[in-house]
Structure formats: C-alpha cells, structure tokens
Length: 362
Image (tube, rainbow, N blue to C red; front, side, top):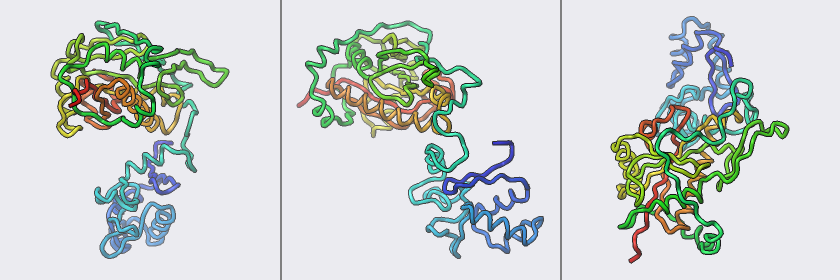
C-alpha cells in the first residue's frame, strides 16, 4: 500500500484508492442516505457526468447500496456506505448481514485467504528486517520460586479416564473453604503449559526460527502465549502477582501493588456474574510478534485460536485434578497491562482463566 487514502469494505473484493479529493467529499456524504440531487448540490466541483460515473463505480464494486424512502438498504438495515462503518450499531452498519458489525466482518475477511492482493499466510513478512522473537520469553526480574514437578507416570495410572474428564468438564465458579496449594498450582501449570522440548532454527526446512513443544497445539509451533497469575489465596504462596516461566517451571514474583490483584479479581467477579473471587486469576498474554514475524494478515486471528486451545487445555487439566476452573474470554485490556507492566501492543492480554480449590460435595 502507498500513502494514498484507500477504502476496503468487507463485502467487496475491491479496494478504492482516492486520487481526487472531491471524491472524499462525496464519500462523506454517502455515510447516510442521500439523493442524486442532494449529492449534486453539495458536490459542485463534480460535473453531472463525473458524479454519475463515480456513483456507478461505487455501486458496481459494492461500496454503496440503494436506499428506499425510509432510508434502508436492500437488507432492511439503515443505508450508508460500507467503507465507513456508519449506521445503526445495533444492526451492524450499512449493507451488512444481520448480526455482524463492520469491524468484525472486516476482521473476519482479513483473516482468511481469498481473492485479495494483500500478503497472506506464512510469508515471513518481518524476516528481512528483524530477528524472530525468542521461543520462550525471558523471565522478568524478580524473586524466582521453583515449582515441584509432578510424576506423570503416576498420574497416567491414577487419572480419571479421558472421556470422564471431557464429559464432566464444566465452568465452576465456586471454590472450597480451604485454598489452593502451591503444589496444586505447580502441577496444574506443569501439566497444561510447560515447555516439553526446545528445538533450534532449521532454515533448510523453511523454519528459520526456534520452536518449542508444549502440552497444547499452537500455530507454527510459535507458542506465543504467556501466563501471568494474580494469586488471591494459595497455601505456600504469598498473595501477589507472578509470571510463569514454562521452560524453567518457575514463578517470578512481580512488584505490582496489592490493588492490582484486587482490580483483576473485581473484573473476574464482573465477568462471572458476581461469583466469589478465585484463588488464582491467570491472564493469557500474547507475544503476538512471534506470529506476525511469520504470518501476514492473520496473526491476531491465530493468537485468538491458540488462546481457545489453551483455555480448553486449562479446563481439562483443572477437571482432571478435581479443581474449580472457569475460562474468561473478555475483560478490560488495560487492567492486566498495568498490573503486569506489559508492553502495549507487543504483549497483549487475550483471555483469562479462574482457578481454585473445589468446594466439598454435599
């Protein structure tokens, strides 16, 4: 793309570059229903023939839609032009299918392959300008807390059958009288998110970056997701903020104030209908450049898919261990950025998971 203004609506396979500033005025007027006479009266710099030609081009390429006398387009939505996203937010904007907003549809379209001229897929768009991000994030400075490693052979003999775990999985927002223990948290993190193997770059196989293997899958084996934890109550671990190092299987204590834990817990309560605070609030953070270094156009879409995979893994491990667990998909992006001192737009919060001991069955 050059430095000219361009429009690219999600329902059209065309892109318009604006060479003439008079057309920009016309497009601004088309953000709401307007008659040909009104447009001609307010675009005096355009001749009648030029106005007709531009409108014909915009219509044939899917940038504008005809409106009826009530100001609705052919879909029954308030009419306007797709390139602006203006229109009634409840209806998703002009010319959009029901249930869609302009930005969601544009993001969907941009994250899939199709007849577009933008780069897409594993084309390594940053390969020539910067090295790849490391396969495992360096642990932050702070006090390191080693975690115990469970005996997987013993667990494989004693665990509930997988079908039982899968069928009994549910979001649990109630917690036990006694808190989670540091041994349980260590086992949970080890089983769900540790680094199993670390492999160097292999350029001859078109893998010019180091990768890891972990218990859950990840696009391109990038494993861009990090786990940060706000501990509310945990036997053997002080209340506070921590970062999990999946390679060393350790926690690093972070310097955040106690109020940061409170803010994260308040968000958890709001997201779960006022449920009591969990023992531990885990924030999933994406080092998104691990993906955008390799993939063009859809790195963010991939990190959201990876987030879903990790959340499911956390759910199943919590169920297998007899703990209460609940995934959280939303939240204020600024709260964890401030709490964990994340680099804006480089380390982005993409999800959360609430963990705690299970209440005693009645």
